[in-house]
Image (cartoon, rainbow over all chains, first blue to last red; front, side, top):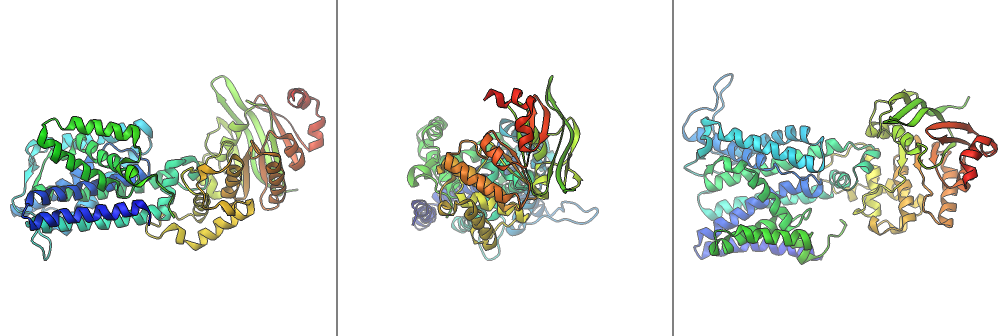
Length: 327
Length: 248
Protein backbone atom coordinates (compact mmCIF):
# COMPACT_ATOMS: atom_id res chain seq x y z
CA UNK A 1 0.00 0.00 0.00
CA UNK A 2 1.20 3.53 -0.65
CA UNK A 3 2.64 5.46 2.24
CA UNK A 4 0.07 8.20 1.86
CA UNK A 5 -2.80 5.73 2.15
CA UNK A 6 -1.25 4.31 5.33
CA UNK A 7 -0.86 7.81 6.69
CA UNK A 8 -4.50 8.59 5.92
CA UNK A 9 -5.70 5.48 7.72
CA UNK A 10 -3.49 6.25 10.71
CA UNK A 11 -4.79 9.80 10.85
CA UNK A 12 -8.43 8.66 10.66
CA UNK A 13 -7.78 6.14 13.44
CA UNK A 14 -6.09 8.76 15.59
CA UNK A 15 -8.91 11.25 15.10
CA UNK A 16 -11.35 8.56 16.22
CA UNK A 17 -9.14 7.04 18.92
CA UNK A 18 -8.29 10.19 20.85
CA UNK A 19 -11.90 11.26 21.58
CA UNK A 20 -12.86 7.67 22.37
CA UNK A 21 -10.06 7.56 24.92
CA UNK A 22 -11.15 10.95 26.23
CA UNK A 23 -14.71 9.66 26.53
CA UNK A 24 -13.57 6.72 28.64
CA UNK A 25 -11.22 8.90 30.67
CA UNK A 26 -14.02 11.47 31.07
CA UNK A 27 -12.17 14.37 29.45
CA UNK A 28 -14.95 16.22 27.58
CA UNK A 29 -12.64 19.09 26.69
CA UNK A 30 -10.46 16.77 24.60
CA UNK A 31 -13.57 15.52 22.81
CA UNK A 32 -14.48 19.10 21.99
CA UNK A 33 -10.98 19.68 20.62
CA UNK A 34 -11.30 16.60 18.40
CA UNK A 35 -14.71 17.84 17.22
CA UNK A 36 -13.13 21.15 16.30
CA UNK A 37 -10.48 19.29 14.31
CA UNK A 38 -13.16 17.37 12.41
CA UNK A 39 -15.14 20.53 11.65
CA UNK A 40 -12.12 22.61 10.63
CA UNK A 41 -10.92 19.71 8.52
CA UNK A 42 -14.31 19.65 6.80
CA UNK A 43 -14.05 23.36 6.03
CA UNK A 44 -10.56 22.73 4.71
CA UNK A 45 -11.71 19.83 2.52
CA UNK A 46 -14.16 22.27 0.98
CA UNK A 47 -11.46 24.83 0.27
CA UNK A 48 -9.06 22.15 -0.94
CA UNK A 49 -11.48 21.28 -3.71
CA UNK A 50 -11.11 24.80 -5.08
CA UNK A 51 -7.53 25.45 -4.02
CA UNK A 52 -5.84 22.08 -4.39
CA UNK A 53 -7.67 20.56 -7.32
CA UNK A 54 -8.79 23.72 -9.10
CA UNK A 55 -5.91 26.04 -8.23
CA UNK A 56 -8.38 28.71 -7.12
CA UNK A 57 -6.75 30.58 -4.25
CA UNK A 58 -9.83 31.86 -2.46
CA UNK A 59 -9.32 34.13 0.52
CA UNK A 60 -13.06 34.46 0.97
CA UNK A 61 -14.13 31.07 2.20
CA UNK A 62 -15.10 32.59 5.54
CA UNK A 63 -18.16 33.85 3.66
CA UNK A 64 -19.40 30.28 3.18
CA UNK A 65 -18.32 29.21 6.67
CA UNK A 66 -20.26 32.16 8.07
CA UNK A 67 -23.31 31.62 5.89
CA UNK A 68 -23.43 28.03 7.12
CA UNK A 69 -23.17 29.32 10.68
CA UNK A 70 -25.89 31.94 10.23
CA UNK A 71 -28.16 29.44 8.46
CA UNK A 72 -28.02 27.42 11.67
CA UNK A 73 -28.30 30.52 13.87
CA UNK A 74 -31.29 31.99 12.08
CA UNK A 75 -33.25 28.75 11.81
CA UNK A 76 -32.57 27.73 15.40
CA UNK A 77 -33.19 31.17 16.93
CA UNK A 78 -36.61 31.33 15.31
CA UNK A 79 -37.36 27.83 16.49
CA UNK A 80 -36.37 28.62 20.08
CA UNK A 81 -38.43 31.82 20.16
CA UNK A 82 -41.36 30.18 18.34
CA UNK A 83 -41.49 33.00 15.83
CA UNK A 84 -41.75 32.22 12.13
CA UNK A 85 -38.98 33.47 9.81
CA UNK A 86 -41.62 34.85 7.44
CA UNK A 87 -45.35 34.62 7.05
CA UNK A 88 -45.91 36.37 3.73
CA UNK A 89 -46.27 35.09 1.02
CA UNK A 90 -45.97 31.72 2.71
CA UNK A 91 -45.06 30.54 6.17
CA UNK A 92 -41.48 29.52 6.93
CA UNK A 93 -40.77 28.27 10.42
CA UNK A 94 -37.45 27.89 12.16
CA UNK A 95 -36.15 24.42 12.89
CA UNK A 96 -33.97 22.60 15.39
CA UNK A 97 -33.39 19.60 13.13
CA UNK A 98 -29.75 19.21 12.14
CA UNK A 99 -30.27 17.49 8.77
CA UNK A 100 -32.64 20.24 7.68
CA UNK A 101 -30.23 22.92 8.91
CA UNK A 102 -27.35 21.27 7.03
CA UNK A 103 -29.39 21.23 3.86
CA UNK A 104 -30.26 24.92 4.16
CA UNK A 105 -26.65 25.77 5.10
CA UNK A 106 -25.27 23.92 2.08
CA UNK A 107 -27.83 25.28 -0.36
CA UNK A 108 -27.40 28.87 0.75
CA UNK A 109 -23.60 28.74 0.81
CA UNK A 110 -23.62 26.99 -2.58
CA UNK A 111 -25.78 29.79 -3.93
CA UNK A 112 -23.46 32.43 -2.49
CA UNK A 113 -20.43 30.61 -3.93
CA UNK A 114 -22.13 30.45 -7.30
CA UNK A 115 -22.80 34.18 -7.32
CA UNK A 116 -19.35 35.11 -6.01
CA UNK A 117 -17.74 32.68 -8.44
CA UNK A 118 -19.73 34.09 -11.33
CA UNK A 119 -18.11 37.47 -10.73
CA UNK A 120 -14.69 36.60 -9.34
CA UNK A 121 -13.72 33.69 -11.61
CA UNK A 122 -13.32 36.16 -14.44
CA UNK A 123 -10.10 37.19 -12.74
CA UNK A 124 -7.06 35.08 -11.95
CA UNK A 125 -4.05 35.14 -9.65
CA UNK A 126 -3.69 37.98 -7.18
CA UNK A 127 -6.87 39.64 -8.48
CA UNK A 128 -8.88 36.54 -7.70
CA UNK A 129 -7.48 36.50 -4.15
CA UNK A 130 -8.40 40.16 -3.70
CA UNK A 131 -11.90 39.85 -5.15
CA UNK A 132 -12.77 36.85 -3.00
CA UNK A 133 -11.34 38.67 0.04
CA UNK A 134 -13.52 41.66 -0.76
CA UNK A 135 -16.66 39.53 -1.00
CA UNK A 136 -15.79 37.89 2.31
CA UNK A 137 -15.47 41.30 3.96
CA UNK A 138 -18.81 42.39 2.50
CA UNK A 139 -20.52 39.53 4.31
CA UNK A 140 -18.64 40.41 7.49
CA UNK A 141 -19.84 44.00 7.52
CA UNK A 142 -23.32 42.94 6.55
CA UNK A 143 -23.47 40.56 9.50
CA UNK A 144 -22.20 43.26 11.88
CA UNK A 145 -24.83 45.74 10.77
CA UNK A 146 -27.82 43.40 10.75
CA UNK A 147 -29.45 43.98 14.15
CA UNK A 148 -32.24 41.44 13.62
CA UNK A 149 -29.77 38.61 14.21
CA UNK A 150 -27.58 40.05 16.92
CA UNK A 151 -25.37 42.35 14.88
CA UNK A 152 -21.93 42.56 16.41
CA UNK A 153 -22.95 40.51 19.47
CA UNK A 154 -23.97 37.47 17.49
CA UNK A 155 -26.67 34.95 18.29
CA UNK A 156 -26.80 32.44 21.11
CA UNK A 157 -28.64 29.16 20.75
CA UNK A 158 -29.44 27.65 24.14
CA UNK A 159 -29.83 24.01 23.26
CA UNK A 160 -27.86 22.22 20.57
CA UNK A 161 -29.95 21.22 17.58
CA UNK A 162 -31.25 17.69 17.37
CA UNK A 163 -30.44 14.70 15.25
CA UNK A 164 -32.97 11.84 15.10
CA UNK A 165 -31.98 9.07 17.51
CA UNK A 166 -29.01 10.86 19.06
CA UNK A 167 -28.42 13.04 22.06
CA UNK A 168 -26.40 15.78 20.46
CA UNK A 169 -25.59 17.46 23.76
CA UNK A 170 -23.42 14.48 24.64
CA UNK A 171 -19.99 15.54 23.31
CA UNK A 172 -19.03 12.12 22.01
CA UNK A 173 -22.28 11.77 20.06
CA UNK A 174 -21.88 15.18 18.49
CA UNK A 175 -18.30 14.27 17.66
CA UNK A 176 -19.55 11.10 15.98
CA UNK A 177 -21.85 13.15 13.77
CA UNK A 178 -19.01 15.44 12.68
CA UNK A 179 -16.62 12.54 12.18
CA UNK A 180 -19.07 10.63 9.99
CA UNK A 181 -19.85 13.73 7.92
CA UNK A 182 -16.13 14.37 7.47
CA UNK A 183 -15.67 10.76 6.36
CA UNK A 184 -18.53 11.02 3.84
CA UNK A 185 -17.22 14.26 2.39
CA UNK A 186 -13.68 12.86 2.19
CA UNK A 187 -15.04 9.85 0.34
CA UNK A 188 -16.97 12.09 -2.05
CA UNK A 189 -13.93 14.29 -2.50
CA UNK A 190 -11.68 11.30 -3.28
CA UNK A 191 -14.12 10.05 -5.89
CA UNK A 192 -14.45 13.51 -7.37
CA UNK A 193 -10.67 13.90 -7.72
CA UNK A 194 -10.58 10.75 -9.82
CA UNK A 195 -13.72 11.45 -11.84
CA UNK A 196 -13.77 12.98 -15.28
CA UNK A 197 -14.76 16.28 -13.68
CA UNK A 198 -11.72 16.04 -11.41
CA UNK A 199 -9.46 15.28 -14.36
CA UNK A 200 -10.70 18.29 -16.30
CA UNK A 201 -10.50 20.59 -13.26
CA UNK A 202 -6.99 19.50 -12.42
CA UNK A 203 -6.02 19.87 -16.06
CA UNK A 204 -7.39 23.40 -16.04
CA UNK A 205 -5.25 24.19 -13.00
CA UNK A 206 -2.11 22.95 -14.73
CA UNK A 207 -2.79 24.40 -18.14
CA UNK A 208 -6.05 26.20 -18.84
CA UNK A 209 -5.28 26.75 -22.50
CA UNK A 210 -4.84 23.02 -23.03
CA UNK A 211 -8.25 22.29 -21.55
CA UNK A 212 -9.98 24.99 -23.61
CA UNK A 213 -8.32 23.71 -26.75
CA UNK A 214 -10.00 20.35 -26.34
CA UNK A 215 -13.34 22.14 -26.13
CA UNK A 216 -13.91 22.22 -22.37
CA UNK A 217 -15.17 25.48 -20.87
CA UNK A 218 -12.81 26.18 -17.96
CA UNK A 219 -15.00 28.95 -16.54
CA UNK A 220 -17.94 26.61 -16.07
CA UNK A 221 -15.67 23.95 -14.71
CA UNK A 222 -14.27 26.29 -12.08
CA UNK A 223 -17.67 27.72 -11.25
CA UNK A 224 -19.03 24.26 -10.49
CA UNK A 225 -15.95 23.45 -8.40
CA UNK A 226 -16.20 26.74 -6.50
CA UNK A 227 -19.90 26.14 -5.80
CA UNK A 228 -19.29 22.62 -4.47
CA UNK A 229 -16.39 23.93 -2.44
CA UNK A 230 -18.56 26.64 -0.90
CA UNK A 231 -21.31 24.15 -0.04
CA UNK A 232 -18.88 21.90 1.87
CA UNK A 233 -17.38 24.80 3.80
CA UNK A 234 -20.93 25.98 4.53
CA UNK A 235 -21.76 22.61 6.07
CA UNK A 236 -18.68 22.94 8.28
CA UNK A 237 -19.89 26.40 9.30
CA UNK A 238 -23.27 25.03 10.43
CA UNK A 239 -21.53 22.36 12.50
CA UNK A 240 -19.13 24.88 14.01
CA UNK A 241 -22.03 27.08 15.07
CA UNK A 242 -23.73 24.06 16.58
CA UNK A 243 -20.58 23.09 18.45
CA UNK A 244 -20.38 26.51 20.09
CA UNK A 245 -24.14 27.06 20.19
CA UNK A 246 -23.21 30.56 19.14
CA UNK A 247 -22.88 32.46 15.88
CA UNK A 248 -21.17 35.78 15.44
CA UNK A 249 -19.69 37.91 12.66
CA UNK A 250 -16.26 36.55 13.71
CA UNK A 251 -17.02 33.55 11.49
CA UNK A 252 -17.02 35.94 8.54
CA UNK A 253 -13.65 37.60 9.25
CA UNK A 254 -10.78 37.25 6.86
CA UNK A 255 -8.80 35.66 9.69
CA UNK A 256 -11.22 32.75 9.38
CA UNK A 257 -10.52 32.56 5.65
CA UNK A 258 -6.83 32.62 6.45
CA UNK A 259 -7.14 29.87 9.03
CA UNK A 260 -9.04 27.60 6.65
CA UNK A 261 -6.26 28.19 4.14
CA UNK A 262 -3.65 27.46 6.80
CA UNK A 263 -5.23 24.04 7.47
CA UNK A 264 -4.87 23.19 3.81
CA UNK A 265 -1.32 24.49 3.43
CA UNK A 266 -0.03 23.00 6.71
CA UNK A 267 -1.42 19.58 5.85
CA UNK A 268 -0.62 19.61 2.15
CA UNK A 269 -2.35 21.34 -0.74
CA UNK A 270 -4.29 19.01 -3.05
CA UNK A 271 -3.74 16.03 -0.74
CA UNK A 272 -7.00 14.34 0.20
CA UNK A 273 -6.19 14.28 3.92
CA UNK A 274 -4.20 17.51 3.84
CA UNK A 275 -6.89 19.57 5.59
CA UNK A 276 -7.37 16.85 8.23
CA UNK A 277 -3.66 16.78 9.03
CA UNK A 278 -3.50 20.57 8.93
CA UNK A 279 -6.49 21.11 11.19
CA UNK A 280 -5.20 18.51 13.66
CA UNK A 281 -1.79 20.17 13.76
CA UNK A 282 -3.39 23.61 14.14
CA UNK A 283 -5.53 22.56 17.10
CA UNK A 284 -2.62 20.69 18.66
CA UNK A 285 -0.43 23.78 18.41
CA UNK A 286 -3.19 25.95 19.78
CA UNK A 287 -3.60 23.54 22.70
CA UNK A 288 0.09 23.01 23.49
CA UNK A 289 1.57 26.40 22.62
CA UNK A 290 -1.57 28.30 23.62
CA UNK A 291 -0.96 26.94 27.14
CA UNK A 292 2.55 28.36 27.16
CA UNK A 293 1.95 31.75 25.70
CA UNK A 294 -0.85 34.02 24.63
CA UNK A 295 1.17 34.81 21.55
CA UNK A 296 1.30 31.29 20.17
CA UNK A 297 0.41 32.55 16.70
CA UNK A 298 4.00 33.66 16.24
CA UNK A 299 5.11 30.01 16.40
CA UNK A 300 2.36 29.11 13.98
CA UNK A 301 3.68 31.80 11.67
CA UNK A 302 7.21 30.43 11.84
CA UNK A 303 5.95 26.92 11.17
CA UNK A 304 3.89 28.12 8.24
CA UNK A 305 6.93 29.87 6.80
CA UNK A 306 8.99 26.72 7.15
CA UNK A 307 6.30 24.64 5.44
CA UNK A 308 5.92 27.08 2.57
CA UNK A 309 9.70 27.45 2.10
CA UNK A 310 10.91 23.91 2.64
CA UNK A 311 7.99 21.49 2.60
CA UNK A 312 5.63 22.44 -0.17
CA UNK A 313 3.72 19.18 0.23
CA UNK A 314 2.89 20.14 3.83
CA UNK A 315 2.82 17.63 6.67
CA UNK A 316 1.68 14.82 4.38
CA UNK A 317 4.39 15.69 1.91
CA UNK A 318 7.02 15.35 4.65
CA UNK A 319 5.65 12.11 6.06
CA UNK A 320 4.37 10.36 2.94
CA UNK A 321 6.66 11.61 0.21
CA UNK A 322 5.99 13.26 -3.09
CA UNK A 323 2.62 13.11 -4.69
CA UNK A 324 2.25 10.37 -7.24
CA UNK A 325 -0.06 10.64 -10.21
CA UNK A 326 -3.39 8.91 -9.62
CA UNK A 327 -3.37 5.22 -10.53
CA UNK B 1 -13.86 23.08 -57.16
CA UNK B 2 -12.35 21.65 -54.02
CA UNK B 3 -14.21 22.23 -50.83
CA UNK B 4 -12.88 25.03 -48.62
CA UNK B 5 -12.93 24.00 -44.97
CA UNK B 6 -11.27 26.91 -43.23
CA UNK B 7 -10.95 30.45 -44.46
CA UNK B 8 -9.78 33.82 -43.26
CA UNK B 9 -11.06 36.91 -45.06
CA UNK B 10 -9.18 40.21 -44.88
CA UNK B 11 -8.04 39.54 -41.35
CA UNK B 12 -6.34 42.50 -39.67
CA UNK B 13 -4.78 42.72 -36.24
CA UNK B 14 -2.61 45.52 -34.93
CA UNK B 15 -0.74 45.91 -31.69
CA UNK B 16 -0.38 49.63 -31.31
CA UNK B 17 1.28 50.93 -34.46
CA UNK B 18 2.47 47.47 -35.45
CA UNK B 19 0.27 45.73 -38.02
CA UNK B 20 0.90 42.11 -37.03
CA UNK B 21 -1.60 40.84 -39.57
CA UNK B 22 -2.51 42.99 -42.53
CA UNK B 23 -5.42 41.93 -44.66
CA UNK B 24 -4.81 38.21 -44.52
CA UNK B 25 -6.91 36.03 -46.79
CA UNK B 26 -6.13 32.38 -46.65
CA UNK B 27 -7.97 29.16 -47.30
CA UNK B 28 -7.54 25.55 -46.36
CA UNK B 29 -9.10 22.98 -48.68
CA UNK B 30 -10.18 19.47 -48.02
CA UNK B 31 -7.39 16.89 -48.12
CA UNK B 32 -4.51 19.33 -48.26
CA UNK B 33 -1.61 20.42 -46.16
CA UNK B 34 -1.31 24.16 -46.37
CA UNK B 35 1.97 25.38 -44.97
CA UNK B 36 2.40 28.84 -43.55
CA UNK B 37 5.97 30.03 -43.50
CA UNK B 38 7.69 33.30 -42.81
CA UNK B 39 10.56 34.74 -40.86
CA UNK B 40 10.35 35.29 -37.11
CA UNK B 41 8.02 38.11 -36.22
CA UNK B 42 6.08 37.85 -39.46
CA UNK B 43 2.80 37.39 -37.60
CA UNK B 44 2.31 33.63 -37.88
CA UNK B 45 1.48 33.13 -34.22
CA UNK B 46 -0.89 36.09 -34.26
CA UNK B 47 -2.71 34.54 -37.20
CA UNK B 48 -2.89 31.11 -35.56
CA UNK B 49 -4.30 32.63 -32.39
CA UNK B 50 -7.00 34.41 -34.34
CA UNK B 51 -7.93 31.23 -36.14
CA UNK B 52 -7.97 29.19 -32.92
CA UNK B 53 -10.04 31.79 -31.08
CA UNK B 54 -7.62 33.12 -28.48
CA UNK B 55 -7.37 36.53 -30.14
CA UNK B 56 -10.08 38.72 -31.70
CA UNK B 57 -9.22 40.30 -35.06
CA UNK B 58 -9.59 44.06 -35.49
CA UNK B 59 -11.42 43.45 -38.73
CA UNK B 60 -12.08 40.67 -41.19
CA UNK B 61 -13.50 37.26 -40.41
CA UNK B 62 -12.74 33.61 -39.92
CA UNK B 63 -15.01 31.06 -41.57
CA UNK B 64 -14.96 27.44 -40.53
CA UNK B 65 -17.07 24.79 -42.29
CA UNK B 66 -19.10 27.53 -43.93
CA UNK B 67 -19.90 29.27 -40.66
CA UNK B 68 -18.60 32.64 -39.50
CA UNK B 69 -16.80 31.85 -36.24
CA UNK B 70 -15.09 35.22 -35.78
CA UNK B 71 -16.92 36.03 -32.56
CA UNK B 72 -16.68 32.54 -31.05
CA UNK B 73 -14.15 31.68 -28.37
CA UNK B 74 -11.55 28.91 -28.24
CA UNK B 75 -13.90 26.41 -26.63
CA UNK B 76 -16.68 26.76 -29.20
CA UNK B 77 -14.26 26.49 -32.09
CA UNK B 78 -12.66 23.38 -30.61
CA UNK B 79 -16.17 21.94 -30.24
CA UNK B 80 -16.80 22.57 -33.93
CA UNK B 81 -13.74 20.52 -34.83
CA UNK B 82 -10.67 22.69 -34.72
CA UNK B 83 -7.77 20.58 -33.42
CA UNK B 84 -4.78 22.63 -32.40
CA UNK B 85 -1.26 21.76 -31.36
CA UNK B 86 0.96 24.32 -29.70
CA UNK B 87 4.37 25.64 -30.58
CA UNK B 88 5.46 25.32 -26.97
CA UNK B 89 3.93 22.13 -25.61
CA UNK B 90 0.82 23.00 -23.64
CA UNK B 91 0.28 19.87 -21.60
CA UNK B 92 -0.70 19.13 -18.02
CA UNK B 93 2.77 18.27 -16.77
CA UNK B 94 1.69 16.56 -13.53
CA UNK B 95 -0.60 14.19 -15.40
CA UNK B 96 0.44 10.88 -16.84
CA UNK B 97 0.64 10.62 -20.60
CA UNK B 98 -2.64 8.71 -20.61
CA UNK B 99 -4.41 11.35 -18.48
CA UNK B 100 -3.42 14.06 -20.93
CA UNK B 101 -4.92 12.14 -23.81
CA UNK B 102 -7.98 11.23 -21.75
CA UNK B 103 -8.52 14.96 -21.31
CA UNK B 104 -8.78 15.22 -25.07
CA UNK B 105 -11.15 12.27 -25.25
CA UNK B 106 -13.22 13.90 -22.52
CA UNK B 107 -13.42 17.13 -24.49
CA UNK B 108 -14.51 15.18 -27.54
CA UNK B 109 -17.26 13.47 -25.56
CA UNK B 110 -18.50 16.85 -24.40
CA UNK B 111 -19.97 15.91 -21.05
CA UNK B 112 -17.34 16.55 -18.42
CA UNK B 113 -19.70 16.62 -15.47
CA UNK B 114 -19.41 13.11 -14.11
CA UNK B 115 -18.50 13.52 -10.46
CA UNK B 116 -18.47 10.02 -9.10
CA UNK B 117 -17.29 7.53 -11.69
CA UNK B 118 -13.50 7.17 -11.82
CA UNK B 119 -12.36 8.44 -15.17
CA UNK B 120 -10.04 5.48 -15.57
CA UNK B 121 -13.07 3.20 -15.49
CA UNK B 122 -14.64 5.04 -18.41
CA UNK B 123 -13.64 2.37 -20.88
CA UNK B 124 -14.81 4.22 -24.00
CA UNK B 125 -12.67 7.24 -23.21
CA UNK B 126 -9.76 4.99 -22.40
CA UNK B 127 -10.09 3.19 -25.73
CA UNK B 128 -10.12 6.48 -27.65
CA UNK B 129 -7.10 7.68 -25.70
CA UNK B 130 -5.05 4.50 -26.11
CA UNK B 131 -5.85 4.41 -29.81
CA UNK B 132 -4.48 7.93 -30.23
CA UNK B 133 -1.36 7.04 -28.25
CA UNK B 134 -0.76 3.97 -30.39
CA UNK B 135 -1.04 6.00 -33.55
CA UNK B 136 1.74 8.38 -32.51
CA UNK B 137 3.78 5.60 -30.93
CA UNK B 138 3.45 6.58 -27.29
CA UNK B 139 1.43 3.63 -26.01
CA UNK B 140 4.45 2.19 -24.21
CA UNK B 141 4.91 5.27 -22.04
CA UNK B 142 1.22 5.84 -21.29
CA UNK B 143 1.75 5.52 -17.52
CA UNK B 144 4.69 7.88 -17.34
CA UNK B 145 4.42 11.37 -15.89
CA UNK B 146 4.30 13.92 -18.70
CA UNK B 147 7.03 16.07 -17.15
CA UNK B 148 9.40 13.12 -17.56
CA UNK B 149 8.90 12.84 -21.32
CA UNK B 150 11.56 13.93 -23.75
CA UNK B 151 10.92 17.01 -25.82
CA UNK B 152 10.18 14.92 -28.89
CA UNK B 153 7.72 12.74 -27.02
CA UNK B 154 5.88 15.82 -25.80
CA UNK B 155 5.47 16.94 -29.40
CA UNK B 156 4.02 13.54 -30.23
CA UNK B 157 1.70 13.76 -27.24
CA UNK B 158 0.43 17.13 -28.47
CA UNK B 159 -0.53 15.46 -31.73
CA UNK B 160 -2.12 12.53 -29.90
CA UNK B 161 -4.36 14.87 -27.87
CA UNK B 162 -5.46 16.60 -31.07
CA UNK B 163 -6.23 13.21 -32.63
CA UNK B 164 -8.67 12.27 -29.86
CA UNK B 165 -10.84 15.21 -30.89
CA UNK B 166 -11.36 13.74 -34.37
CA UNK B 167 -11.07 17.30 -35.67
CA UNK B 168 -12.25 18.56 -39.03
CA UNK B 169 -9.11 20.67 -39.30
CA UNK B 170 -5.68 20.42 -37.72
CA UNK B 171 -3.96 23.63 -36.78
CA UNK B 172 -0.34 22.78 -36.08
CA UNK B 173 2.10 25.34 -34.80
CA UNK B 174 5.64 24.13 -35.47
CA UNK B 175 5.15 20.47 -34.68
CA UNK B 176 8.71 19.67 -35.84
CA UNK B 177 10.39 22.22 -33.57
CA UNK B 178 13.15 20.56 -31.60
CA UNK B 179 12.66 17.10 -33.04
CA UNK B 180 15.68 15.03 -34.02
CA UNK B 181 16.24 13.73 -37.54
CA UNK B 182 14.41 10.46 -36.91
CA UNK B 183 11.62 12.19 -35.06
CA UNK B 184 11.05 14.62 -37.91
CA UNK B 185 11.06 11.81 -40.45
CA UNK B 186 8.45 9.87 -38.51
CA UNK B 187 6.26 12.90 -38.04
CA UNK B 188 6.50 13.86 -41.73
CA UNK B 189 5.37 10.37 -42.63
CA UNK B 190 2.55 10.56 -40.10
CA UNK B 191 1.27 13.97 -41.22
CA UNK B 192 1.47 12.85 -44.82
CA UNK B 193 -1.16 10.23 -44.10
CA UNK B 194 -3.13 12.40 -41.70
CA UNK B 195 -4.14 14.91 -44.39
CA UNK B 196 -6.62 12.39 -45.78
CA UNK B 197 -8.42 12.47 -42.43
CA UNK B 198 -8.52 16.22 -42.06
CA UNK B 199 -6.66 19.04 -43.78
CA UNK B 200 -3.74 20.59 -41.92
CA UNK B 201 -2.73 24.21 -41.61
CA UNK B 202 0.92 23.80 -40.82
CA UNK B 203 3.14 26.53 -39.42
CA UNK B 204 6.69 25.30 -39.73
CA UNK B 205 10.25 26.50 -39.82
CA UNK B 206 11.71 23.22 -41.03
CA UNK B 207 11.89 23.82 -44.78
CA UNK B 208 12.61 20.19 -45.61
CA UNK B 209 9.41 19.19 -43.89
CA UNK B 210 7.44 21.96 -45.57
CA UNK B 211 8.68 21.11 -49.05
CA UNK B 212 8.10 17.40 -48.45
CA UNK B 213 4.56 17.81 -47.16
CA UNK B 214 2.85 20.94 -48.40
CA UNK B 215 0.33 20.98 -51.21
CA UNK B 216 0.34 24.73 -51.05
CA UNK B 217 2.45 27.27 -49.23
CA UNK B 218 1.65 30.77 -48.08
CA UNK B 219 4.50 33.08 -47.22
CA UNK B 220 3.92 35.68 -44.55
CA UNK B 221 6.30 38.63 -44.30
CA UNK B 222 5.77 41.66 -42.06
CA UNK B 223 2.14 40.75 -41.53
CA UNK B 224 1.29 40.34 -45.20
CA UNK B 225 0.94 37.26 -47.34
CA UNK B 226 3.30 37.94 -50.23
CA UNK B 227 2.54 34.77 -52.15
CA UNK B 228 0.42 31.64 -52.03
CA UNK B 229 1.17 28.78 -54.37
CA UNK B 230 2.54 25.32 -54.94
CA UNK B 231 5.95 24.29 -53.65
CA UNK B 232 7.65 25.10 -56.93
CA UNK B 233 5.94 28.43 -57.34
CA UNK B 234 7.04 29.51 -53.91
CA UNK B 235 10.52 28.13 -54.27
CA UNK B 236 11.06 30.09 -57.47
CA UNK B 237 9.40 33.29 -56.36
CA UNK B 238 11.86 36.16 -56.36
CA UNK B 239 10.26 38.04 -53.51
CA UNK B 240 10.25 34.97 -51.31
CA UNK B 241 13.90 34.32 -52.03
CA UNK B 242 14.77 37.83 -51.08
CA UNK B 243 12.59 38.04 -48.02
CA UNK B 244 13.08 34.66 -46.54
CA UNK B 245 14.86 31.78 -48.17
CA UNK B 246 17.82 33.85 -49.23
CA UNK B 247 18.61 34.62 -45.64
CA UNK B 248 19.23 31.02 -44.81
